[in-house]
Length: 125
Image (cartoon, rainbow, N blue to C red; front, side):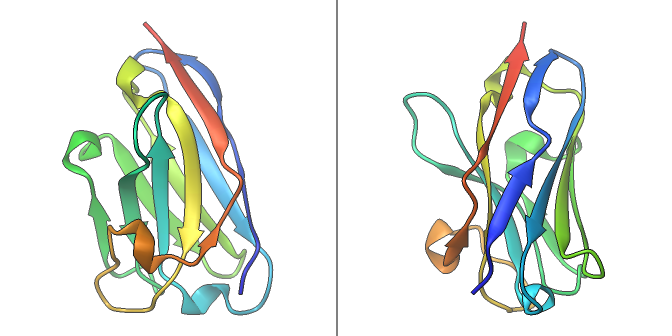
């Protein structure tokens, strides 16, 4: 079990950038694959990006490829989501999640058993 806390959300204009951070408690962070998900108003929670436990494999939803980058620093128990060229449709609550240790990280929320509280990202037109 890990406790997760997101930070770095806020209000930004379209075309701008934000970097989200997710800090984890406990010494087992480095054993987990990590994912970022988001829930936009009136929509289901969706996968955004994931990284495996050692950072050697990443995957992204098509809508953010080339704009978002996921990374992790196991020495700091932190995973990041760098978001560039933000669009109004990126507006959502962003959640980080921990779960699994397969080489290829899962895009399914059901494979993640630990979740943060979320951080709001709002992109104005």
